[in-house]
Amino acid sequence: MTCAPKEPGWKVNRSGPEAYEQYIVPAWMDEWAKALVAVAKLQPGQRVLDVACGTGVVARKAAIGLGGSGNVSGLDSDPGMIRVAKQYAEKEHAPFIDWQCGDALRLPFPDEQVDVVLCQQGLQFFPDKQAALREMSRVLVRGGRLAISVWRGLDRSPFLAVLSEVLGRYLGPEISQLFQATCSLPRREDLRHLLKAAGFNHIHIRLESKVARHPSFLPFLHGYISVFPFAARIAALPETDQAGMFGDITTALGAFMDDDGLAVPMESHLLTACKPI
Image (cartoon, rainbow, N blue to C red; front, side):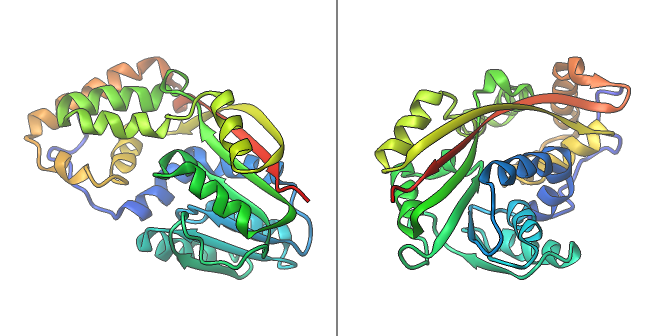
């Protein structure tokens, strides 16, 4: 396998949200979204809120699962994510979803108006995790259900660990810190404490492991990197540095290639809890 990009002078040729939906969703987030919606145990007619919805993969699966019998809202702070979420919901013929751009720390919903709150890989990024969880509790009806997912540590996510090390080496420690933040809540005890402190009960934490797959590693890697704002910095690097960086990543992930392409494991905690009656 070559260690350099197929085309010299890699360029950012797609928006972050579009790259997210094109590369990350089919490689692994689609399967994780199925798992999250499954543990949420949605029932016909329920009102569902997907917080930090990104391009809406969880909200779409929730809406399709409810078959139009309930109400689904998706909220994200990034207008670009909401724009792409609307486009893909239409492509997948998902039942109507109310898309909103807003802050997870100040949810634009009245008290006790939602039956289920979902959040896929968002909690670790909120600047005030307790405030975000309290907001989720506020909008839930009494007895309402929370279902969230959180990656385990970098030591359980080889793909992210390699990117943290290599990109940090080429671009600076702040890039490593970004990936460290992605996996900054690896301990069940810490997650349980956060939920208890926010007033939730009946807390259940399930460890899940899945293999992220993509048939062509370098196109996937380029697309994955396009998701992030620092992609422009990589595009501005000399071609020799780009080749060295992509080559180092490819070499480090060599153990996670098979005859079908990339096959890298990732682990996540799936958490469910209830708002007290």
